[in-house]
Length: 402
Image 1 (tube, rainbow, N blue to C red):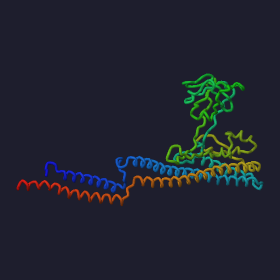
Image 2 (cartoon, helix red, strand yellow; image 1 turned 90 degrees about the horizontal axis):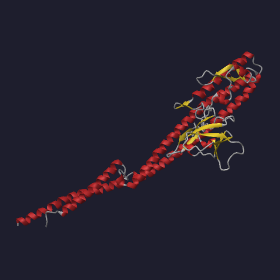
Image 3 (cartoon, rainbow, N blue to C red; image 1 turned 45 degrees about the horizontal axis):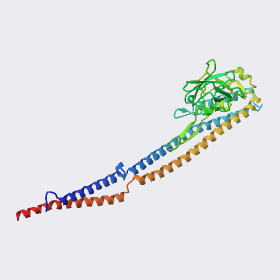
Image 4 (cartoon, rainbow, N blue to C red; image 1 turned 90 degrees about the vertical axis):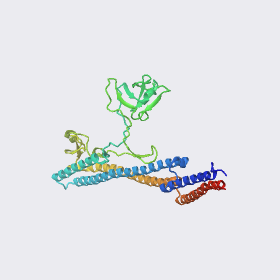
């Protein structure tokens, strides 16, 4: 019998600690609802769970993005619905003005309404906004064309960035159907000078780069030999709208919101003075101008229905405008339907992913409660046994007393 080292008490104390720690872990899981509360609980499971959480939150946000995209499209489509109504009324006015039962003052009254309706189409196109962005004035349209490089400009300069390290003396460019060649390598140069290539003077091993292949911001400007800039030489600017509809990068659906003002619809003239309009076969009304939908002082001229001939021409012009608006609305409808299907798919995927993440991370309350009960009983038993183990050294006193 020894008393310096109470081995029974030490063993019991160890078991009490193990049971207590297990009970604490069970309490933590039961109180949080998760079986993984820290990396030590399940390192691999934690990594899998966090990756799933990223996907779930991304999918939920993508669904919100798609819903916002639908709202944006509905805003544009609603505006075009009004343009359709206006165009139908304009066509009705043109048909009314085409009959000679009208007196001249009747046609003039019809012409006045035609001008007002044209101004309203311009206003709708210029002011329709979603979240502060104008969406029917052409700002959200993909632009792929460059300003023409005239044949008289024998030498032009392209200020380049990423391309400058790849250009050598054999690099050819096709710009607006004309072939140009670098005069020298452009390694680390801020610009490269090109000369126009004469037919048959293209090297067999040269590489032709079209405007679209060169890409948007890689061309900053084009100048001629006198150093005069060629308007805007930015090529391939993509101003179309991208709806991010996935949990990961570059998972997008894009569309364009085209210019739907009167000029693009073809129901106003491009001329800005009455003289030019009057000389245009009576198609445009020289004395009935309309606001062009901007804050500028320039005006445009509406269709001329003050004569029978003009009214007949106007019917055909308005028919084309109606078709253009119909095509645009059809495009919006197709994109909206696609986004709604996308939302359904995103929500279903998020639900399934949440179920998978739950399997990895959520605690089974019934199972964990059984574990907690077991550990709690073991802890109480260990406490009782520790009392007994601590009492055994007292027996040594009986030997001393004897």
